[in-house]
Length: 481
Image 1 (cartoon, one colour):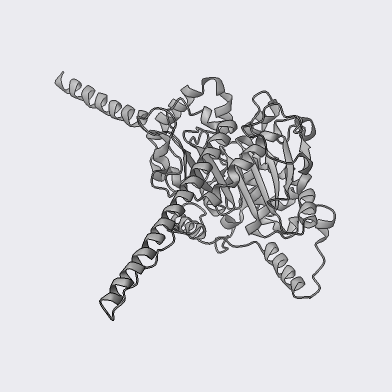
Image 2 (cartoon, rainbow, N blue to C red):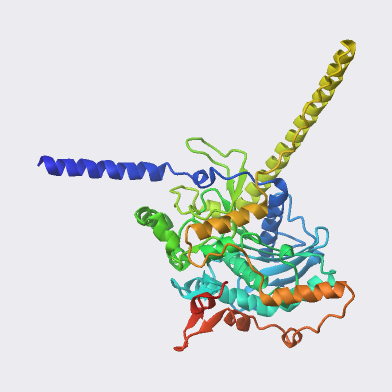
């Protein structure tokens, strides 16, 4: 009797401890050790949010549901708008916008439409470990959608980039379902930049808002220099490794599903999660917008934290009443705008404070020199220079550190450096010759008749004797990725 009572007490204490830890776990805990993002690197986020919202509008000249302050875009610069009728269910609707003021070519893809069966088909077209790609695994349905989009629009994007003097930045942006499509499009373009006129990697960027888990951990870290994911506080989608098709299939009992996922993940060791190459993650560098804190009522001025996490990459479900509302693009746009304004205001106050300090030091120096002259002292001491406020690490260094940490944790197929594909190197060499006055080689025959992106995806694999697709790295252990 006493033994059974003791076991019951231990079990009760264990369950109580688990419930307390889970109920008190808030979204801000995921990024509490991350540094703050600078206004310059976060400045495009509110703007691209408004572009995604513009996809929902049938007429941008007479908008029905504009955000605060309007869309702040020129309708004449919208080169193309594509609806569900045009995509035939192979991709969410999107638009192509050329911002001549900021020299940007933006392709914005909307999120999941709960009323469209075609969007569910994209989500259902996947299972664990189904699609291998570029040394890792990705969501099969989202990859097919990305390939279809590039087959349709790659020549248009290439033509626009060349007509604008090959100087504009090319940005892919998406929300929810569209974020996964945009991220995988970016990966494809980065590996085959020669098919878009040889655009430099530094001019490619992707913003994944409320990102779906669409690629394995090694790919998420590898492409962190070009893919940026934005997560608002307690958003559920980047945190759950449950397949997307199961999440949205159970949308009407989502709180119950999130609780069960939370309970299941509690008993899965962190090392086991990291060692599973089929497990999908949110892509790229993470930007976490934090606006609520534990045991505090209301919303606070939001702050944006950023990092390239390897372990602890949004692995814990937050049991919050805001887990679904934080997924909405409208809230992301509002809080991103507030965060940017707060960051700019804080930066302005910092510069003003530094200016006051410098004025005070200048006055102090003059006063000190005057005293020295009066005392006829030969020793003159100059106060130390004020050092500029800079981040401890540059974005490039953070990316290198993340790659090295992924290798140290034995993440499957992780690489310590990012190597350029051979085709991209040849394109850059030809461009350098052209700049030096040499006559460049003619473009490949495939470019003249249009690029087949399905064939390019197939080149990333090698077929075994049984006809099964194998990763090139796995088929040849001596070959580096």
